[in-house]
Amino acid sequence: MTTIRVRIGEQWFTVEVGDLTQSPVQVTVDGETFEVEVESDAAPTPPRRGRPAGGLVVPDAPASPQSGPAAAVDDDILRSPMPGRVMSILVRPGDAVSTGDEVCVVEAMKMEQSILAHRDGVVKTVFVQPLDSVNANDPLVELE
Image 1 (tube, rainbow, N blue to C red):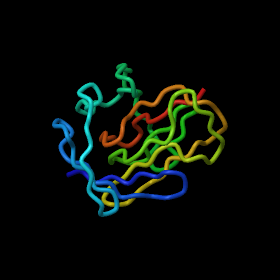
Image 2: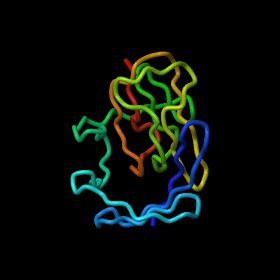
Image 3: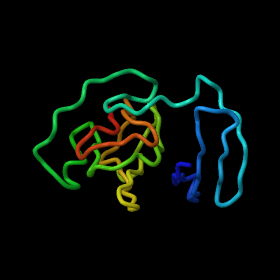
Image 4: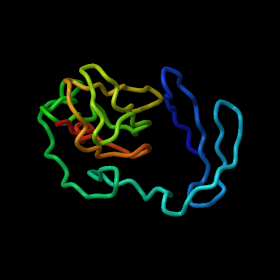
């Protein structure tokens, strides 16, 4: 099982998801287990760097010489501040965001890092999906 944290409104939930290649899938939400049907088209494909949600392939962005949290902001592109796994994505293309809005969460070694919008804008592209592995400075979300 894979364990992820999801936020609905202001409340966080711990969700354990079973094998997504089979249906029904066993899902446990805060200790309560459910069996859910998954459409074959909805089953995730293995994560690939640089793939936006929706399946289009975008070339990888060049690595920034910066490191640490300052590297997470690059004009229109929000980047991962560290290597880790994308735990949740809270926006979709077309969503309006304001400065300080949480757009996704990256986890490394059981520590979650909220990725915040550094300016007002509209989400143009989401480059990752939940459970994708990312490296430091990988693009996560592009604003326009």
